[in-house]
Length: 328
Image (cartoon, rainbow, N blue to C red; front, top):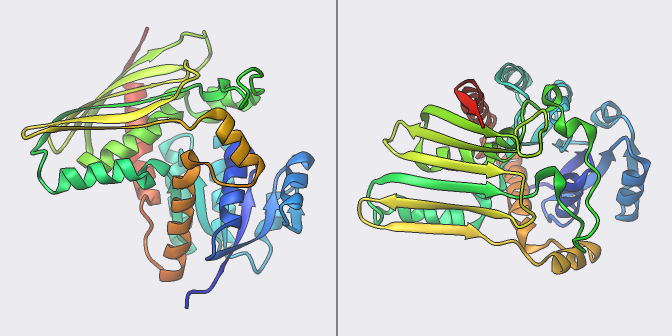
């Protein structure tokens, strides 16, 4: 019987709290510690039963019984935290994107290899049933060769409202600072869609981007990319932060047939009720599946999918898109 993996959660922002709740419900893991600079966030974790609370993640990493960590920190902290975790021998689940740029990403991968720990990067679309089933349809040949595809991930980004739809959430200062994030909507949402389409079509051959600045920010708030894959598929990727109603999906057009899957957002009130009750809303179920996969990989000493190498390839593709871009 596989042993239970002791997890530490680092970063308790919105997604960090989702990961905390999901980890607490995993039969294959124990949450033994959390770290966050916010006392309010630590109080939240304490109320859920976590006893070891730290304001400095380095202290959490020194805990000898912590087998692995789930890192949901701002992007500029990904590299220092992940490298520190590797140095302490902790397996790592890291929120996307891997880092701000490929150089930082390579530093993370070097540390992971040097200290022989497992690294998985969080891409929940890989664990969303509709996207999984679409990949199976591609692989069974019923769609033929996929000639073109359209992938979209449009939502509110940092401007999303609370469940009642009235009060906008405060935007952390780092989120709109290109030096701290590596980019805007293309880095944030584009990483999901680059990863998904690479999973479908293989390696990126060339990529170009049109960057938009509807809100006159220092980072792009929407982007449209044209991506050519070595497989011969050409894909349009459309991402943006400008809509309170999310649209996440993909259309595939093959030589035999076409297929579409779009992920529908759960009702905001229903989502809020589930969160209050400590349940996992349907939209966040894939986040639990990816964490379960991570824990299983630790127990089986196997390479997770998506891996750190996957995430580095995503980051390189996004960097190339920025380098081959024009602004609107």
